[in-house]
Length: 554
Image (cartoon, rainbow, N blue to C red; front, side, top):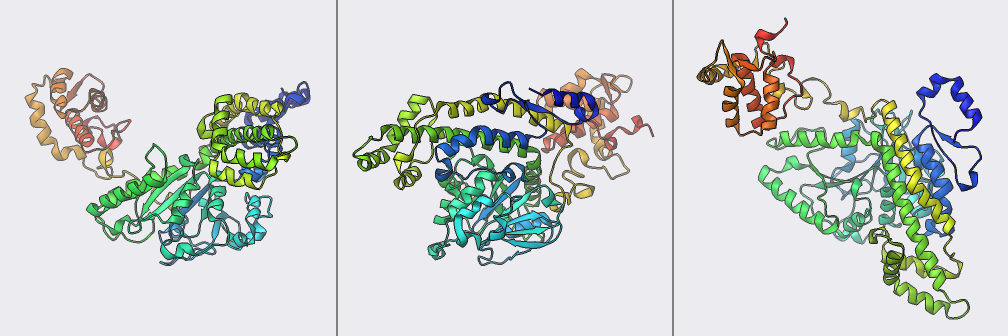
């Protein structure tokens, strides 16, 4: 509902109304018949939904104590974040420098565990470092809730700010190198896995880095990966320093990596692994150069798309949080309901904690909830040990109804707003640094290969093998210098390519659209078949350098 003053304003300034996507809904049952709420951005809508509908449920059932701190304004408005995790000396810091193409404050690189801190690499007009204790009191930064991890963590947390074009679109989180062997026994002084879990819930992409010579997954690394559970859609794996092994060794390394990951990442889908050497120095073994280039391009495309998908990711995370909050409310209210009024409270508490798996199953059946929506039972049992069950609340249907209405109606409306934003704004993508290194010129992806071969040459590239193609052409009994579609088809199907592909080749080769092929067009068809058989994609339209010379305008 849009109020009359707002409606008058919109009518009075139609050009402004067209330039802004407006979105509204009633702010809640208590506001029915009152002023509506109008939003111009998805982040505003998400923040309003959380504050008015989800946060009251979380606070009433102590969700923040058990699972995740309350969300703040910065959580809805921050740039997409990329979290890098890996054992020491796998190239995490070097990877960041490779993306930025410049050093950042606090950067240290070496074969030993050099990065001993969490470093948020962010955009800033002036280069500098903000220490952790100052960072968590800045309301404009999305890190205020990290204050709960204490001084031991905050002394190992900092923000490195610098003016860099890449950082105008994303924020990169560098993490301490995960320890292995005897080093695992060293205490960090804070809960490393819980800090990773906090970041994993809020970032847009999680990149696990592995060294081609260091595939063992230590106990600490295994715990770190387990802390990412529930964020599987965000995880990507990078096999770094792959130029240090030959092709045969690389196949074995890749197989060993997938086997190791299968033991710790419990998902039916195979995680995406990018293979390459992510630094600016020459490749040591160049036989897989083409593979590394393609893998790098795929990884860059994935990271480039983060700003465009940021709103959708925040919406998805809010839905996951709402589902968990609902389940948590059912658990807490059930425990409250089962508690005795007077005597035997401690005995009953211990009994219910021990039979929490059974309670989970009961609630699944009663409320038709998927088992995957329930929190980790062991962690929940540990948390409940220190809780006073008498302070829990019974089920309050109005709070659950507000969340159900949000999931059923308002989320769908926000999806419409996301589509409107995407349509009205220019495409957002990460630019600058390494992302611009191959945008133009001969180092662009696919430049001079496949259909792009011969783009810089004055000679028609098809002419190199035209004599061979002419022999076939004249064996097809051309009439008036052209072969019919039926005769050309007999030769083209020998390639064993599908009819859909051959149909596209025919469309590209029959440049004058007369339903027949002359000698140049037939040679072009043969050239395009060769391109496809070599594994390259066909162009959507025939490039200028492939147009038969006799049909060129100039």
